Length: 109
Image (cartoon, helix red, strand yellow):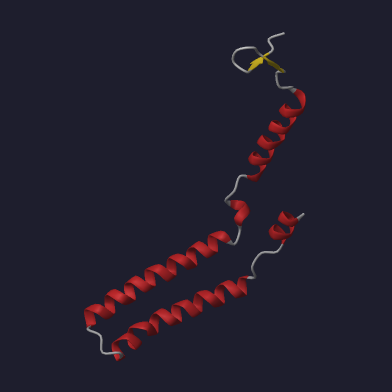
């Protein structure tokens, strides 16, 4: 099915390494670009640190999400769903009978 196609087609390593290198290249030259825009040195350092932390964090999250089936316990989830469906087919719900005072009552017999 669709999950097998997702599992069988990972993101190529060349693409991943290329985006990581491009990100590092951007972050190396970001302080130079900010310094050229007449910002103070402290502001340049703070902005560069904030942008670097954010973008490197997003890059790390993207690496983790490339293989979603390592994160999700699919075998356990599938087994639990299978057991719930089997219980639904095997165990019949109790039959309901109309009561005179309180509406529906469960038939104990």
